[in-house]
Amino acid sequence: MAGTDAPGAGKRRVHAVSFAEAPAALAAVRRLRAEGFEVHDVHTPFPVHGLDEALGLRASRLGRMTFAGGVLGAAAAFGFQVWTHAVDWPLVIGGKTPLALPAQVPVSFELTVLFAALFTVFGLLARRRLFPRIDGRPADQPHPRVTDDRFVVLVVERDAGFAPARFGELVTALGAVERAESWRAL
Image: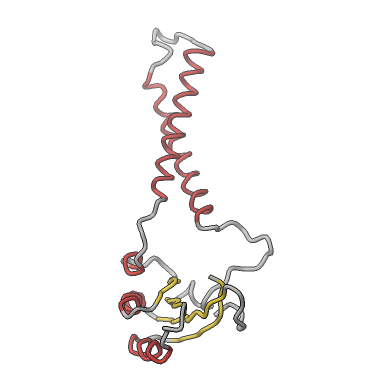
């Protein structure tokens, strides 16, 4: 597991428990939380259905960003077309009014989709702080095979109430493939 071995200011001991199968990792998260251990994060090579609920995560607010981007795109497209066709350069083409709505639908639709997609991508990057690192270091991974075939559950020791012996027995009973610990700033 990546991280330094020496404790420091703001660092906590983190236990990385690896599983070979997704159902085993999901069951481990549920059991560890039920036993009172703090599951900080789970790294998986693909999305696991039910993991958000098992971790107790709230619903994502990314949909709101997408909706806001779509509304802004539609308003910008429609507003620009109205201004162009009715105020700045009014032309009567084929006897139609300058504000013929059917002609404005394709552009408004395209800008709605474009703005919604851009707001989604940039909202995700900003919210999860996924911008490139300035120092050039790669992101820390808890296990080298986490992007291939390992499911890694990170459990944090927050206080003296953490029972290492009980944790070790529970992890063994859950069928963990591998276990490592290190210090990590959280």
